[in-house]
Image (tube, rainbow, N blue to C red; front, side):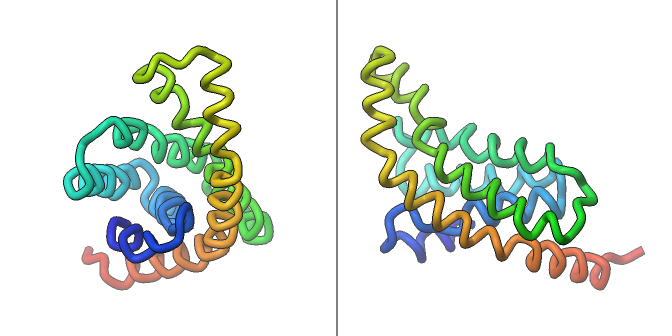
Amino acid sequence: MYCSKIIMEWAPNIHLLGMFTMTFTISYRAKGLIPIYVYVFLNGLFSGFSTWWIPYLYIWTVLWAATMLLPKKMPVKAAVFVYPVVCGLHGLLFGTLYAPVQALLFGFNLQQTLAWIAAGLPWDAIHAVSNFAAGFMILPLVKLIRKLDKKYTYK
């Protein structure tokens, strides 16, 4: 996850993190939190544990939780559309999810918080479109992970 973020830094708000978060959650359920928090820790370690990093402690967990609420055995015909939509919605809501920490740390009132969210909407729209597009890789990657897990699981 961290390497994909570094590789994609040339494109603001375009990355594969939502896709990886959902893929690992669908494949490994609760254990999907492990790669998420390894990513969050590495991000802080290499980019600095600063105020920008604090929302990362929960932002990816929101997507993990939303994915956990999806049916475990969703029909493929539904999953093909539902996974990209959920991934895209997380991208669209990223600024809104980030806002409470901004408000608390910088003393924003409601009007300032809403202005901060509104100012970020163009970036959130880019985030949503890119997450939606990346979301179409979730189902094939889940199938690949399950196939590899069966092949390499020793009994």
